[in-house]
Length: 145
Image 1 (cartoon, helix red, strand yellow):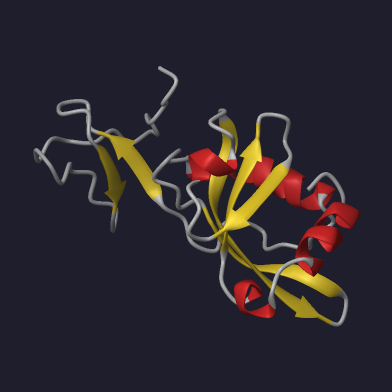
Image 2: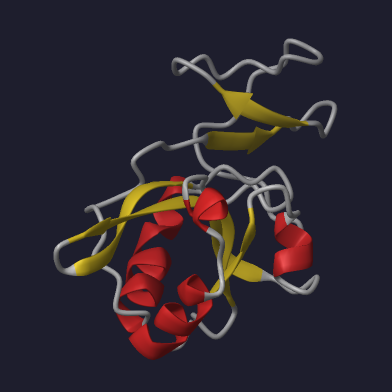
């Protein structure tokens, strides 16, 4: 979605039933928003490439057109940090989509330094669910490392 015209063309091809559900999204390395049906994998949506962010996004239509009404960084394929929001905001602006000021649902991902498993941190409990090891305070899920 490099422009509002791209989004208008894309959304016009979607059945109404599909538009009621959130979509899978990625912001690719060039800062472009890519969308796919919710049941799509983020890595497939990105063509297997590295991304600036990923998650789920929902849209609603108001008097001014389509707006983002919910967005998260929930992607177990990429595990993006919550600090990836600025890349998402730029991509949405480029696509001409009004948006919230940040993720409406933030997911905190960490890789356990002990067992190397990926974790979702809930309620600020930075403990690995697999081995009970301590999880780092800073994001450390760099899949390219």
